[in-house]
Image (cartoon, rainbow, N blue to C red; front, side):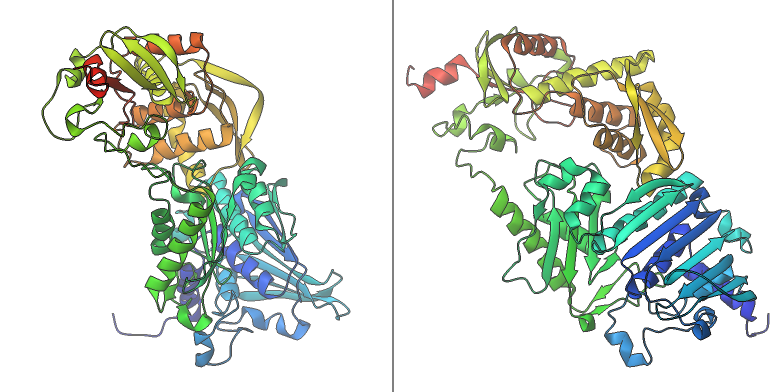
Amino acid sequence: MPIQILSPSVAAAIAAGEVIERPASVVKELIENSLDSGASSITVELQQGGIGSIRVTDDGSGIPADEVELAFARHATSKLTEADDLTYIESLGFRGEALPSIAAAGKVRMVSRPADAQGAASVELEASKVLRRQMLSAAPGTSISVDDLFMVMPARRKFLRTPIAEGARVKDVVAHMAMAYPSVRFTFYADDRLALQTPGNGAVRDVLAVLYGAETATVMLEIRPGERSPYGVSGLISPATLSRGSRSAISLFVNGRWVQSRSLVIAAEEAYRGYLTQGRYPVAALFLQVPPAEVDVNVHPTKREVRFLREGDAFSSIQRAVRETLLATSPIALVSAPSLTTDYVESVAPSLPFTSVGPESQPALLTPPASGDMSAAERPVEEFRMPLLRVVGQISNTYVIAEGTDGLYLVDQHAAHEQVLFERLLKEWDGASPQSQPLLDPYPLELTPEEAEAVEQALPVLERYGFLLEPFGGAWLVRAVPAVGRPVALAPFVREMLTVVRDKSMPMGPPERALAASIACHSSVRAGMVLDRQEMEALLEQLEKADNPRHCPHGRPTTIHMSTGMLDRQFHRV
């Protein structure tokens, strides 16, 4: 084909496809414009996940009547005037492409009025063409409606997900904008149902209470200003006792802009090294302040990614701020005891320090070592059986002390119960006979976009373990959960299950095994829980009958054995 200039309509469609990927893209661009206009209240309304219609209304400064139509012209913007302005961008929207791209992708109606204007100007467009202009009576601010998104772009429309999944993506955008601007009141309706509303009082913690629940928000740790960090960091992070099974709750903001940065996510994760086990991730809302001239926000059409002039300084600022906060609020216990050949010595040593145990007489872990010869206590799983144990007591409300045929046994109550439940669940799976517990009141579950997208595919696996979920408006209702172990917090429990089912890289193997491991982990007794003698005896009896009693499904040892001979040597009896 000969080289030719594309027609304006084709060029507009290409630009629209770059900037507007789905309903969430439209909402993000419109919210950014609302924030740039100084809005203190923003309302987002969706029908059919935004595929049917979108409306964003604000109480910002509004647009004068003679500029309303100009706002939809290609490359029109009020944020910059010359190329040098791109090196010092402080506004959220600036590219001059959002409104014309939205107008090229659907039917658009804008009504806008500055506070000092007598009336509001209205303009309606379809496929970038102006259909109607008029003056109306309306409150100060701007309202933009978008109907039939991608009606002229069937290739783009066919790649949209279900209304539930698209609506969840929009909610994710609103949630992150609310985090970034806690002084703005955000209200979100999905199919005429109030799905989210923030107080707009300026407190990030109160926004997190709306998004993650008051219990989570209350325990979040406030980032302490670092004296040596290259850049300023603020925000809230979860303590080591609170974690999730995916990175979805790590939110990053650079100069008030919600960004996706693998480097900064890794920085936050690295700060938790030693605090969280593998596969667990924190909840965090981190705000990085960088001189505008040192960050490029113009590297992606949708402004999702940024580029730093000093990437290493951005990384170290996040890592240092998070690490110092963790150290100041929940310092790691220093363990001087020699290694017990696994990383789990840290949880045992503070209560039972083996300070005098030499390498030749260390306690035997009932789990195969990474290398070395196999002793009698480390025989293959299929040949090993737990001895009959007599309960002696409990240490730190975490470890059960028991006496066996040859010495002392310390049993991690959580790991042991976890393995017992894990094996029970696998047997129920094989027999297709899950024990399910119906809920008296169905629990409404708000899902992330990724979770909403995966939930329908995950339903068969979840139902086979006793979960019962059904769609309700833009959310899902939990009607039943597996009837195992202790009561659990439903929201994080179900989210964890969805993460496990959709994550193909889980180290547990098939989804049914990974799911059983996670259900068992959530449902088992925890460290720090007081057990009476009857409960301890029942736990040990169940562990003795387990097929693989030596370690939990995640590989942690359930038991440490100290033989009578080893004790004799330590007390110099031999």
